[in-house]
Amino acid sequence: MVAAEALQRNANNAEIEWVRKLLTWRTQPDGARELTAEEAALVDAMGMGGPSVLLLGFAIENAAKGILSSSGTKTENHAKTGLLRIAEALHSHDLLSLVQACDEPLDEAESQALSELRDWVEWRGRYPIPISYVGYAGVAYGQVQNSKPVYTAGRKILQRLLERLMRAPMSNGD
Image (cartoon, rainbow, N blue to C red; front, side):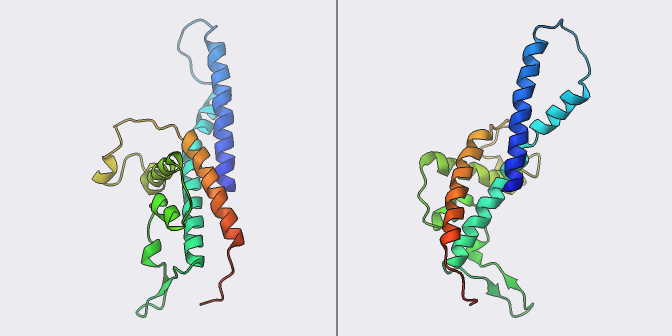
């Protein structure tokens, strides 16, 4: 979450500075030119918004799985390998379903944000296009998604989940 916050803050600050620069460019004569090093750095920093949303989605997923694990959904010991594996009930990136399974109350905007965050966790934060045909269902080619409302709603949900985790009783090791 700390990394997500730092990236989001950098992206927001860069966007504000970019708008300031755009306003000054409007008063200058037309003509193409190369970006300065400072301007190129701003463009790079504005690109940090997407990875911040990906990290936020990971944090929500981990917090929800922590709550579900502390409430009875355990790992499974596979006799063949001797390795512990996450229980099937937790083997998902569907953030909406995971948070709902935690009995966390959600309004419509939060439910929508979790659905969009799922896309960031599954593919949008890692790949340029959906990794399966099913992923194309709600995505128009070249669509640009504004991640700020998603980030803001997701951050509120994560805060509630983390507060619950802090109150959760410690496991007795079973």
